[in-house]
Image (tube, rainbow, N blue to C red; front, side):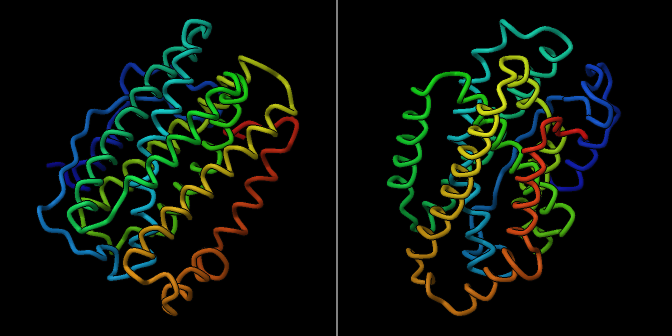
Length: 271
């Protein structure tokens, strides 16, 4: 089992042999082999005894594995057309996303042990993503770039606001590991899109689709889990929700600014 401090050392070790940054300010991409394990018994509300905060992150565990697989299957279709140095980083990106999927999926067993019904949500998510696949590679790449733009912001908020501070240590480790790698590879999906098309309308369409996917899946997962606990209309839950989205963490405000930045003609994730 790898704990948070061990993973910090892995993430901060010298990045020997990695490809050079694509843009000034970007980080080289490196694949790191990790293996998360979780306690046999884990508190139902493992983040500060808070149903809202726990299920917000449980929703990430729930929807990320399949959306990472959607990212991988579309990105893989571009590898033969991509040239170095992006190609080298792209391979590491695919490996990172594969690990994100497999490691988060391990937590499904913990949720099932606690009595949560996950299958209807997972079936809905896969149905949406399979329909999206049929809209063509370019639009899917644009949606992936838009999705990655928002997940980079979420990763930054998790780390800067120390949102996982009160989490069960092993869950804290996986969340902060994923957040750091999300920031590390923040420009890859956008660079792949730019190598495929320079169409601004497609880029914007992908931004909208990517944000819809993230917002719908995150909040639907939250509602599904809170409903099964009969906590959906709990006063404390709604107070904490307001603090997260509007007042303390101001995620909604930051997301709107983040969305608008992407609309700049000369936007790049590293600028």
